[in-house]
Image 1 (cartoon, one colour):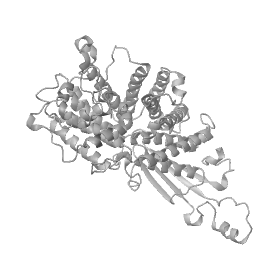
Image 2 (cartoon, helix red, strand yellow):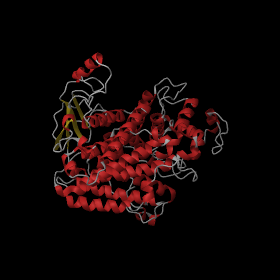
Image 3 (tube, one colour):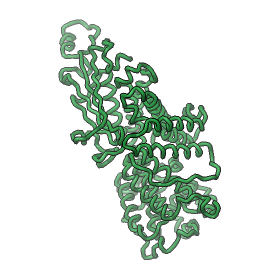
Image 4 (spheres, helix red, strand yellow):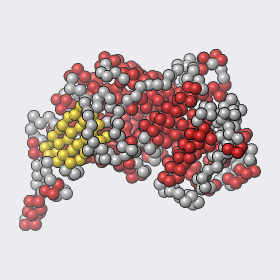
Length: 573
C-alpha cells in the first residue's frame, strides 16, 4: 500500500520504529502541553494485552472506514504542521502510524482520544470485516476501547483542562449518539462544555487580542462552535434548557451553508427557550415558525428540492441531507405540541408539523439512497426519521385531520412516503446492527396494517417509544379465526368442495389503536430502557405512565363505505 502524502511508499507499519520521532514532530507547541496535562514517562499508558490492533488489522480497519472520516468530529492536534490540521487529511498509512503512537502517549487525554477515534472505526466497520490477528469480536473490541478511554479520561480529570480532553469527549458523544444513547451523549458533551468554559473557549474571537490568536485560536473557536450546536440539539431533543452560551462572530462565514447552519442553531435555541415554559406560547410559536421559513430562504430552492447526484461526494451529500434533517426536526418539534391540539386555531401548527415530517423523511431517504449513506451508522438518525413517520401517521389517522379535509395532505403520497420509510428502515436493520431501525420498521408496519384493516400482529401490541409516547394496537378478532392470507376458515372449506372461484373479501375485522404522548414535556422519559433508543420498546409496556394527550382510533373493514366513520383511513384511499 502506498501513500505519497506521508512518504511511506509500500512500507509496513513497522517502519514507524525507524521514525520514532514522528509523534514529536507532529505534536504542537502550545500552552496545553503543560505539566498539568503531560504525565511523567513512568505514567505512560499501558494498554491491556491485545487491545491495540496489530499492523495489518489496524490498516484493514482504517481502510474500510476512511470514506466516513470527514463526517466525524475532526481529530485536531494544533497548528503544526500547518498543511495537516486534521487526521483525515493524512491517509490510511499516516493515520495508522499516528493512532498507534498516540494510543501509547504519556498523555492520558491523547491516548483516550486515539482509542475513541478507533472506536468510531470499529463501530462503523462493516459486519463482514475480517481482522486476522484480533481475537475479539467487533462489539467486544468496541466496548474495550470505550471502557479504557473512559478510564483514561477519568484519571486525567482534576489535573487541568486540555483541548485534547475536550476533543476526546466530543468523539465520545458521537459514539453514544450512533448507539442511540442521547442521554449518555449529553453527559459526555456536558463534561466537554464545562472544561471548555474553564479554558474560556466561550469568549468570542473579538474578545481576545482583537480577534487574533492564529491557528490555535481557530481550533478553539471550532471546538466551541461544535459544542454550542450539539448542546442546543440535545436540549431540543431531551427537553432540557440551554446551558451553553453562544457567540456571534463578525468574521465572514466560509459558505452560505455555514451561515445557514449558524442561523439555524440560534433559532433552535429559541425553540428550546420556548419549551421551558409550562404553557408554551402559541404566539411565540407562530413567530418562530415564520422566522424558520425566512431562514429556509437562505438556501436556494434547488438545494432543498434536488436529490443527491451521482457526481457528488459523500461528504457533500451528507452535509446537505443532515442539515435538511436538522432543519425539519426543529420545525417539527416547534409545532408538535400544538399539532396534537384539538383547537381549530392551531391549523398552522398541524400543517407545518406534517410538512416538516415529510421533509425530514425525504431527506433521510435521500441520505440512505447513496452508497455510503446506506452504511452510515447512527441509530439516533433512524429514530428521528421514525419519529417523523409516526407524526405524519398520526396526522393521517387523526379525527382532526380527516374533518379538515385535504387542507395540507395528499393522502396517497403520504402513505407511499411512510411505506418507503418503513422499507428503508428494514433495509438498514438488515445491513447493519441497528435495533432502532428494526423496531421502528415493525411499529410503522403494524400501524399501517391497522389503519388499512390488514393487521397481522399480536392480539394486543404494546410499545413505549422513548422521548415520544406509547402506542397500543388491539385486535378484536382472534388470530386463530383468520387464515394467514386474510381469508377465513369457511373459505378454506369451500375451496376443497367447489371448483376454483374468485376469492371472497376477507371477513370483517377491526383494530383499535391508542396513541399517547406528552405535549409539554415530550423529552422527559424517566423510565427509558437501559439501551435508551436501542432498548426493548416492549419491555416498558406494563409501566404506569402519565400522558397529557391520548387518542383512540377504530378501524373497521366492514364499514368502509360509512361516511360518518371519520377514523377509517380507507375512506380516503
